[in-house]
Image (tube, rainbow, N blue to C red; front, side, top):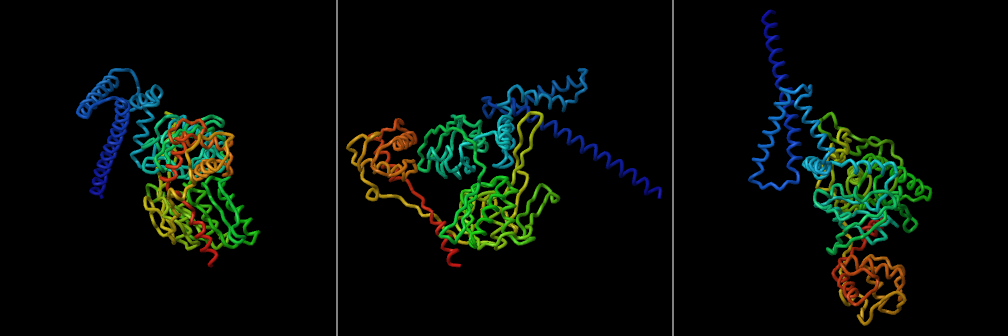
Length: 502
């Protein structure tokens, strides 16, 4: 008994010693972390050659250590070195916010491509948007290979009126480069007070770059479009997953049921995702009770959560349309439908984003940390990140490149302007319409709409934008039409054919 107690005391002393050592290590680690941040901040935006970098860091460390030692040993402050360093970081944040923001964004960005630091102004703007105070230009976008790829254009939005199309890349906003790491927060720069203007630099599929001035508008809350094809097949397109998307989808499903429609196409193409919970709720509408929707995994096993379906609400012969821009919450729906064999997947392999980000406000320095906190698995346990989901039937949209013989003839005999009429005007309007520059009716009349479309094209091609279709503009129009690959939707007809055959 006595021996046992002695062993117990010795073990306790050893445990206490290990705990104290661990605590000291943690304190030192935090101290080193804060020192690292201070060093990063001091070195930010300074021109230092590689051979001088190590010497500079050592000098700064020596200066900081000396000041901290003297302060801690001789001053009357009750602050620890750790507190002094932390307070210094907060002070620097208030004095040189831009530099600190870039340092913090660089640190967060090392986690993965979807993690970043959101500066105070951008975070406040994001919160204003959630409260309905912020406008936008009418797009959804995703970051791919360091570029902001436009995925969806909302109808009648400023982006639609300016002729932007899915696949265009945004490379600058108000003259600020938003490629590379900056692409992660580029869409936040596009948002702002309703009615204010923003200049967007767009790189189109044929590498033409143009500046477009857009006026921000109140973004409509509707994220769902619905219709009936051939009187027999329901069609629902989900543009994005907002908080109220499940309710909009359910309303559309009820209308289809009332019309006695039993077959449904759910179009998730060009849907870059959105609210995680909205994706789960939409998938729930089509699954039998207790079927797995998605499994979410956090940092520890305790963070794991399996989302399962409630009682099935709607029975449709279902076909999902997906493509390379079907991402995030859209892939949660796709994976749930496919793995549970609740519908047929048609189109192209999806984007492949299998992570979930959380936004953590930082009270001391303002702003928030957007960081990947979870990964998710499809019901079959598949981690789709960077792989995507392969459809049951691969159907690619048709691509066509026109020959000179297939295009309407341009005579290059006169300069065209408002008030002119003739076959050459109709040829110009055909080419503009083909290239997605809105001209209204393609007829022989050169009107204000024609002049506006010509002006937009000239700006995109780097020509002087004055709305007169001179010989140079006509030549550029034809060359662009010849060098552009046009995409035609063959996926939707394939989905209709699939359902009609059942």
